[in-house]
Amino acid sequence: MSVSDHTEDTRWGFEEGDEIVPGRFALEKLGGGYQYEAYLAWDDHLFSLVVVKLVRPHLVEDEHAIRSLAREAEILETLNHPVIVRSFGAVLERPRPHLVLEHLEGNTLSHAIKKMGPLAPDQLLPLAYQVCSALQYLANMEMVHLDVKPRNIVMTAPPRLIDLSVARSIDAAARITGPIGTDAYMAPEQCDPSLAAVGPAVDVFGLGATLYHAVSGEVPFPRPKDHDASDPAQRFPQLVEPPFPLPDEVPAQISDLVMRCMAGPPAARPTAADVAAELDALILELPRRRILGRARPKIF
Image 1 (cartoon, rainbow, N blue to C red):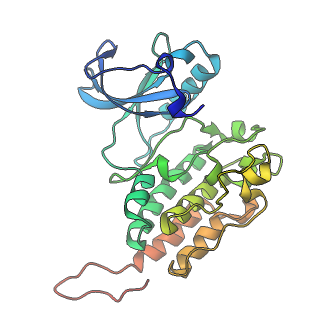
Image 2 (image 1 turned 180 degrees about the vertical axis):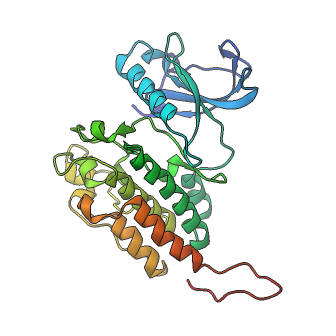
């Protein structure tokens, strides 16, 4: 079911000022997916704007939906990193189970790509470095995000990695038996877990696919609109094909790093910390701002 397929029975339909729970008031609908709706809200206790992520009304009795919300709440409670969205608690009881999340002022990377086109190196590299810090932190915490993509990166200062709804511990990720994530950004072992255990290397692949999209404006594994979703090779071209080459205008150092992040075997991918180290070196080569009319030569 797509978001547009939802009927009135599957939407909360809050208007501005409606009370979600005592002390928490809806202001504006932000969006939603199959299981959840997100609202900008005012929280009296925090005395602040927040985002409220609600289980859709027709799923409040669904054990899987509530269990997923509880898992996300538990994961967020254990994390504390400047590039990962913060949680301010959860209500898991009926009638309106929800998470309370940090409200972030800024567009997602996907919106920026759509509006402005591919990112220049001086935009891309610092952003990628910050996201790497979040991914390495998750790996250090023995967690896997599983859904790194442009839509899940908010371009605030610093940027934020959001939506841990499918995140798992490394142990739990290794027990995944079917596809999980967003098709265009999934590592081969996410598409088919029989290939290798799902672990932190899938987040590096997702980062590579995200950077590919950011620097080229296209996804690395395009598929026709009339593809057969029941055929894994058509649904997931990354199972059988390497990514399309990046455009010639992309600097070779960036292109090489992005492609290594999307290596097929997990062991062939760098860690997030390795990627950050290479990005740091590239950032140091970026042209500096003019000082008293002088500037460093342009490297890229």
